[in-house]
Length: 330
Ligand code: FAQ
Image 1: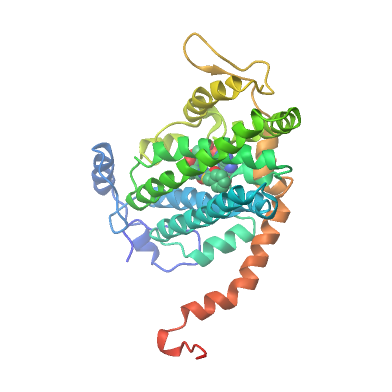
Image 2: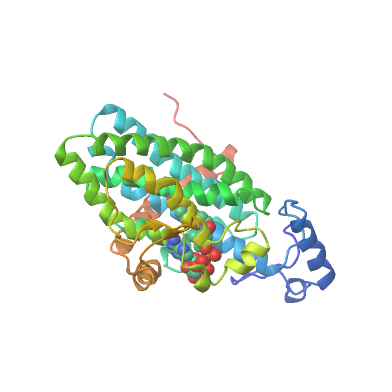
């Protein structure tokens, strides 16, 4: 059984009266628990809007992990050398594992894995903007491993201290692995940035391609972010989109400049108040991309559909009761 206040926009399950059984006393007690820093667990009462928002956010995060494995996955066979190949295989496998952890966390809120995957494949659910772009060269893989993993860590370290127990515990574990991914990305990035002129050019061009998607990664500016206020009040988001973007710039822009690389924004600078100033990235492009018009959106969903269809027999076999499983004896 799931906790109270359950409203969910799928054909479901619980009577309307039960869904509407929210009351102000319960809401006040719930918010007091959050204010004290307590974790909310799956069986606890929660407002339906808290549940709905968490499902949206965790599901989107889970989809981002499994779709996020695809741009780097295409480079496994082409990674330069045995060690880079091994590290990339392990990383891509980890990202799929993060998807599993996150789908599990979202399932505790009452949406089935099947419904989540269907919503991904139909285009109803979103996934991170950055995974709609192609990884054109090996340097793109280095930029993803270094800077997108770094951006993900900034977000996840903060939100791991949030209010919903299953999501926080999943994030904590994910962050350990992401830190390792960042190290491998950083190592590949440095190798190129300090390599031959051709390697340096290759990494500079990849950086130029990825800069805008990375600036978009943290979400729209605070003044236009539709969900931030409520999510921050309920400690699902522990920092605003702009604060996370600023934290990322503070940690990583100096590292990029130190390597003699540039960023494609002439206005990028830290002001006297310690805040980063930058050219506003093209938010119309961001919304086009996250609404299904990204350069690789069709391809990403096609690959996932292929995996769903061709993996169905494996899932079916695994879900059989153990007495019905028969294994050939050699
Ligand atoms: N991409 O009101 P807000 C990774 C949507 S994991 C797509 O500000 P919110 C690991 C948002 O859904 C990467 N859509 O939204 C890895 C909303 O649309 P809706 C994923 C975005 O939720 C590394 C609308 O814009 N991480 O990289 C994006 O309060 C390397 C309005 O925006 C997570 O998902 C976006 N970037 O704040 C894997 C972390 N930004 O739903 C492989 C959890 C916004 O109303 C290789 N998520 N939108 O139709 C979050 O922390 C939040 O969802 C934010 C956005 C901060 C991303």
